[in-house]
Amino acid sequence: MNPSPEQVERGAGALIPFAQEWNLPLNPEDLHELAYAVLVHHDSDASWDEIGAAVRAQIADARRRHEMLDTRRREHPAAE
Image (cartoon, rainbow, N blue to C red; front, top):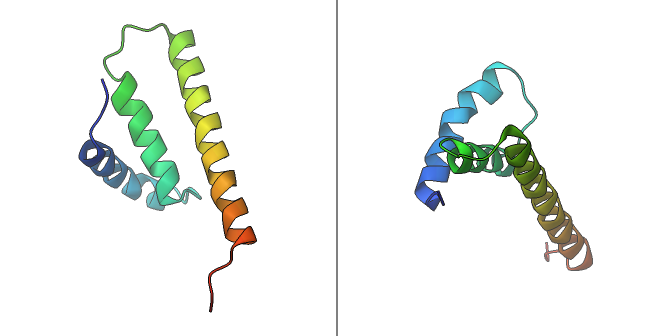
């Protein structure tokens, strides 16, 4: 399953109360990644190991994207 952006957004929204109630230091991008993983794998025929490997790859990809954005922000700060 490839969830739509709206499904991911709604899934992330459903996770906000958990993050708040449990004082989890998660930003909106983290919640979107969690929601995406759940939606992609909720009805999967993959093994637990395959799901774990796919989610770890997703996490690594998200980390690379965040690092690239941080680098760009440092190299090209917005005018204040």
